[in-house]
Image 1 (tube, helix red, strand yellow):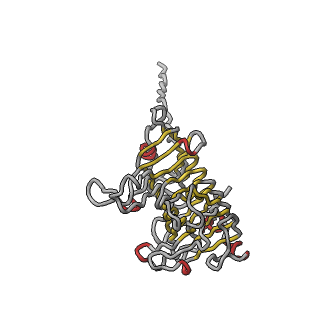
Image 2: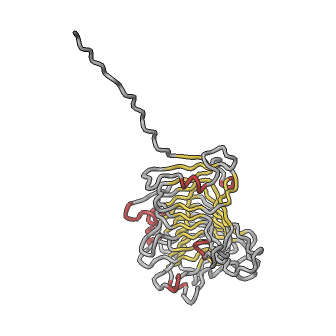
Image 3: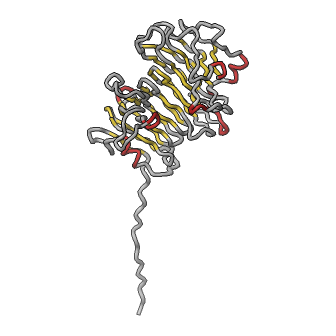
Length: 339
């Protein structure tokens, strides 16, 4: 009798590859109908790029990118930044449902704590209406708060009034770098502020009029930590206004959060076109701290607002060679997102 060998086979079903992208669409034609839902679906501690494509529409929601979700990209599907708007409408003084108010950081429409974040071709907005809420005195209303490192914003619009773009870092001793390429930022009071290290490359920076004949606000309020040589750099930018009167807008003032004496603002405007709305003496004091103790400089600016006076420190050619976009962003890891 011949024994027969019977070999059984078991089908092996391959494990599905983890998703690396998703689509957000208000009409239900994508994977999610809200931006936050798409972010929530990103695997925690992901180690590679995850792209969320957003179809046209206005997405009224508070969005948070947590620190355990790096490498996220948000991109508008059409390439036109105005087609996709992520917005919310609360201010620092807006009452919270459980009591108290939101505060400046809590007012943010979008908060980014995840490193290596990228946004392209979309709009971040805080649509808080100051005129409609005279009962609220603390009108700071942040469109985007950044607290992470190695961020890229390309063809992105930031819309608001006071405190539009809060470029910060995870803590005082940590540097948070961001590259803003061909972006548009608008606001009036301190509308680009914080201790982050940021390069604004070929951006339009628009000052909104507050209806004053003498003071229509401040472009920057940096709070750069003293040991950090790099705060905000505006390179090849254009400073414009909707209707602010001539010589009524400051380039900046030094912000010392909580009176921190080590918050020594560092801001450079170089190779940029400054509109007539910029004051002849564009730097000013803040909360008892003198602008002259900050690190404020200009270099080879042009335009009606670029007059050189004794109140406008200018870089030497040697200094300018060390304060370039690449130097600001390099850090210890030689990061170079510039293109």
